[in-house]
Amino acid sequence: MDQLRAMRVFARVIDEGSFAGAARALDLAPAVVTRLVAELEDHLGARLIQRTTRSLALTGVGERYLERVRAILADVDEAESLVQAASEEPHGHLRVMVPSAFASHQLARHLPAFHAEHPRITLSLTSTVDLASIDEQHDITILALRDPPEGDFVARQFARSEVILCASPAYLARAGRPVDPLELEQHQMLLPPTSMLQRDVSFHHDGDKRSVRVPTPRRPLLSTAHTDTLYAAALAGLGIAGLTSLVVEEALRRGALERVLPGWHALSLGLWMTMPSRKHVPARTRAFWNFMLHTFGDADRDPWQTHPLCSGAPTPV
Image (cartoon, rainbow, N blue to C red; front, side, top):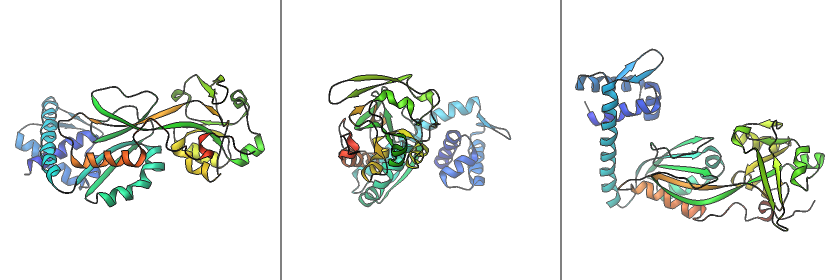
């Protein structure tokens, strides 16, 4: 029995919550995963996982063993990374947790360049809608937050993305273009669920420094946490959507969407790369970290608002 391999499989079964999930994650046949865990239990002479038809749970000895297994695997990975760091080319598998909107609208288009630079690094991208804290099971976690992250981990801000109100030209021609934030209550709004929003939003104006506080609609025309659904609905002319600049930059540039209330600004999110605090950072992790900084920047600024149509400069009506 390859004990180290069996330990990795055992830990992945717990991480995924099922034998089938571990098999998919590891690209193994389910029968192989089941056999390796059974062989590990036979070798140890102890039951590690309590199985039922619908769920599984660690036994008492399984919990204690898993804690030691994670420490051992971390040491093995670090030892391999030390050797890899001395080699000419970073290689191995990298696990990245990333907000789904950033993954689909920004990161994916730059992955060919990363692969060209580092052809021996493979990636697992885990995307989620509402990502608020670092995931210790991933090498790098990308966060989009209003405030800087706090915790015992390494964090680096690489950009900022403003939440922009935008709509299709067809909708604005039909419903009119608001000139003041208070006029938004007369429009069809496309927003995330109210549980993800503040009770009201403060808008400030670039020119005369005016500030207006607008209540968040209790029942917008469309409410969903799925960013791409809001984006598609806005493109289709359903109403005014609140979307980050990293999502709508391209649509604003080609005129498929128009910025509503140019000159007015409300919310923005800082984009952060984070990783667990470790004595040694693998070469593949450093390679991806540096690629992100080179690609998107290394500052508290919005790189997706360089074009006048994106930045909020007044546009012809």
